[in-house]
Image 1: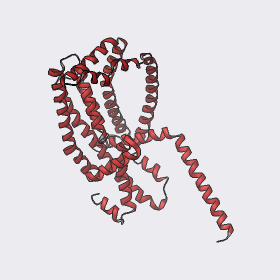
Image 2: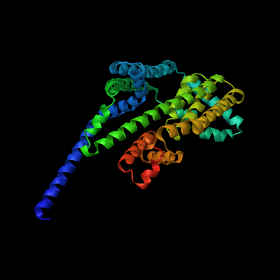
Image 3: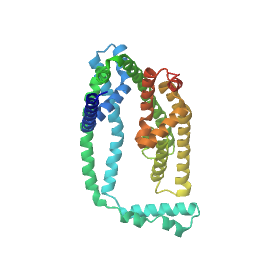
Image 4: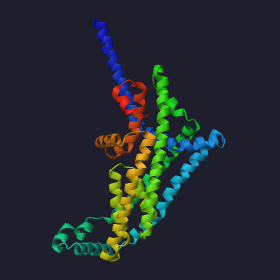
Length: 362
């Protein structure tokens, strides 16, 4: 190898590195658009079975089926938000009429009742919890600023929603559009294998997301029944929030349990602690535990075995590793991402011993 070959190799490497840096910079500049496309892609997987049913069974045209699917998904989204609007409006009205002294008195009464019930030393209890210190640092003048930030967030959400719906329409109308975008970026020699991987990934993830909807629905029904039996205010909304938090593996149920505990206690804040608050909260938490047992021993194994076809221990390790690297977001995307990697590995590394072991049920 002479000096000319070495210099040309260095130049080529520098140009390639520069091109990669420019590409990464461009992707960072349009990251919002990429997020919109990613969300639209995920939603299209959820809406795919509905769209296919309308086309194949009802013989509707593609454009009509796609429009109906989007309207149906939008109806679900609007229905979810409509649950929270009355609650938020009521809370806003309560804030405008907030009687701080009365609120302090209620909290102090609750703390005293807890201390009496558990035979705690009052002086120790007061040192641990000081209501005066709590409210001394609260600046209620920040409420207008919070409202402005909320309006800005709502405006950004509206733009994002329109963008996602627009992209989603074309993803549903042309089910192979996402594939063509990806195939345009890969070498022609591996086009067939990439195409097979994409089709299998779409099928598995579509079933997985539908399974998650079923999982949330089961928990929503259980939680709603439990909260309604014990006359907890806004039972359905609380149940929906706790069921939705369950999408965050391992951490979500803990947050949901704490949220249900606090909201249940706040629903009976004026009642006697030992005869009303404590028993009802205890019964509600028993119902919460029953819901978690149903989810852990029936719902989740069914979803994992019939959608992503992975062993529970395998899923546990992947979720923990992803959570360590990327936090709660990593825990949420761990299973879809891992499933995609497994499908690609099976197609391109089919002879590898580890890949064979991990994908034997595919």
